[in-house]
Image (cartoon, rainbow, N blue to C red; front, side):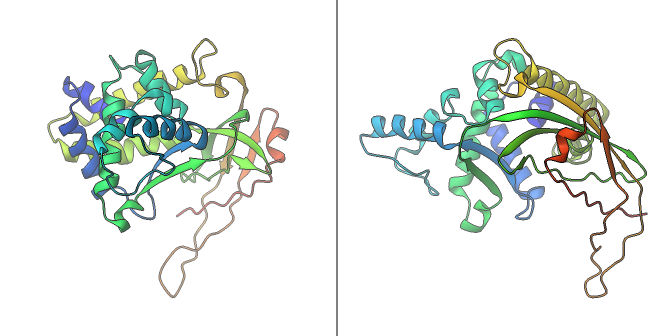
Length: 282
């Protein structure tokens, strides 16, 4: 989304060299081992990819290599196709780019390709900065929880999307909007000082709204099952409290806040047995 916004602000077309430069800088300057870049697929789609590559290279493929394999470009060209993407958002961006504000599927395919190239060229330690997750089992979401935060505490609690076999899609507008404004926008301003920062912030929020609507559209294709379940709104009322500091390392210690979860049909969330911990600086 950040690269897409940057290209729109600059009114330029995507290229492999530009995407490689942006992604490499982002991985070097923003992503850390503690906060890795997240990408996921699932075993079903990955095995379909393995079958396709096995047929092409005439050799059984059962694992995704950590180093550049023979015929690496063949792997990359094949993997950048929609039918191998376990992430529904990425799959839709490639198969229906217009729904996500794209003129064509060039950008998501380049992004996937450069991500894989970066991974294969990275050191063993650096590879851990890419959280390449392969999930197991069917995606069986039952609801969408749309969460917002009121009060003097501006930090946002984390909510587990899965608990005891049940899944809830989490949408946390403040969290993602804050990331776009405080991380992505400054990153691209540093990458290219010529861009208008406010224009970037405005356009990325417009793009986010467009893509969210596309994912939740009840009409085809949408993003099942997210576009087929009920949406429940929840508000966390949180008050900032003074955080005690560890004498040993001056690190803020976790403190339970006076957070209250309220919302329509809040009983849906009770089964998740959520415990909210907020660390807020007064």
